[in-house]
Image 1 (tube, rainbow, N blue to C red):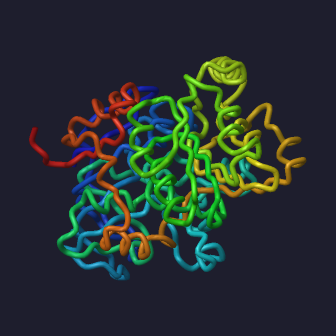
Image 2: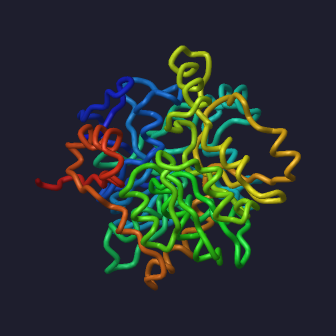
Length: 393
């Protein structure tokens, strides 16, 4: 089959690799019909996340048709399914609490040691996202093996196009959980840093959960325009000081809740961010958490901090004094995708959530390397790239 493989920083290639096979009774093989490039994939593209190996197949946002099943799979050949990016067994302690992204069994034991050293506990299994998360081949390919197929994939009803439901695999539930983690109350003002795909879905979700005002922060005009279409007020951080703008907009109180949808690769010409970039480029640091620092300083006393943005290592200059003195609470983590799929699929079917607005480019799978370059370098106009195996230009 054809698949996109990683070979180093900014070096991804389309190659012919062996077809996946059923290994365990709960496996299924999916023929990919749509797969997307995620902002988290850019962290791999930029070589910020360790333990990728040359030849690893990327991609964790995908859906397709079931073409083979193991003896214990609950799927049937011919079904269309969306596959969560989290690989979860469904029966461990964490899965029993619907904390699917914390599954103890999704990541094979021989891949757990480094994660345990870095984070105190091994990471859970994820598709196409380094050997810290199991080394599973991803879905930017023609075929993919899906472990625990009786737990993860959700069957899509006939008549629902791929474009409507593809983002159930990751970014829609991630934006929804980001808003849920903000503990939004009716009448709240919520500030969202980053108007990439997750940030835009967090904006939409915050309004659905009862937020009175949502303030979206970015520096790409088109992304801010998309946020405004959902009713958000906007701040372009290149044109105005974000902290003082938020204070003015909230009567000097600050937002009730803040959402950091940026993560470890914050942008902007700020003193702390420049220092972070120097440290990262000289291997003296890892993450660039400017957005998180700013969100904590801007949040009102007694407010809530939600962090769906990906962080990979240790961060410097964390304003813990402000966090403690202001009495803030924080919730974060990889998304418990399976927990949210039935509700979100129903909302899409009822036209309560808009998903297709995000897609700016549809490309054949063979053009995936070009899609990565575009998504990396043209973030104002390129909001989401969907790859289609077999698509003709």
